[in-house]
Length: 160
Image 1 (cartoon, one colour):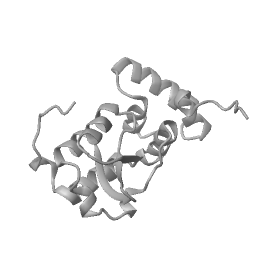
Image 2: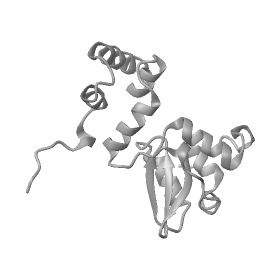
Image 3: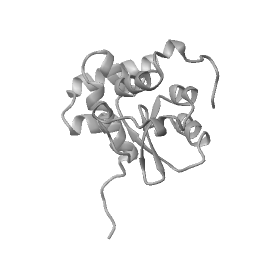
C-alpha cells in the first residue's frame, strides 16, 4: 500500500516548526529572512533569537533525517564505546560514541545533516555504527565527560 504522506526529508524545517506550533509564522518568516541574509541555518537563527530551544530543534532534525532522538544527559557513557572512535574525530564531527546494540556502536551526533562528519566517524571504525541525535549541549557535555575540556584537544586538522 502506497503512502501519500510526504517524506520528512522533503519537508522544510519551517513546515515542521509550524506543524508542531514551536514558532509563530511571523517569527519563522523573520528567521528565514535572516538565515538567507547571513547564510546561517534557520534553526541557528531561531535559537540565537531565543525563539526556539535546541531541545525542541534536535528531535525535529532527527525526525527529518529518520533517526532516533536521545536524551544523552540521561544515559551513561560506556567507556569501551567511547574508546573506539578517536577523540579528534568525534570532536570534529560533534559526536560521541556511547553504547552498543549487539555489535553495532551507537553514536550520538549533534547535527544529523553533517554527512562528512558522520562519514569521518564511519571511516574511523571497523564495525557498523548507528547514529542517533542529541542536542549540541548534551554532546558537548558528554565529550567533556569522556575527554575533558576541548581546549586540550588537538585543533585545526581537517578530517574530511
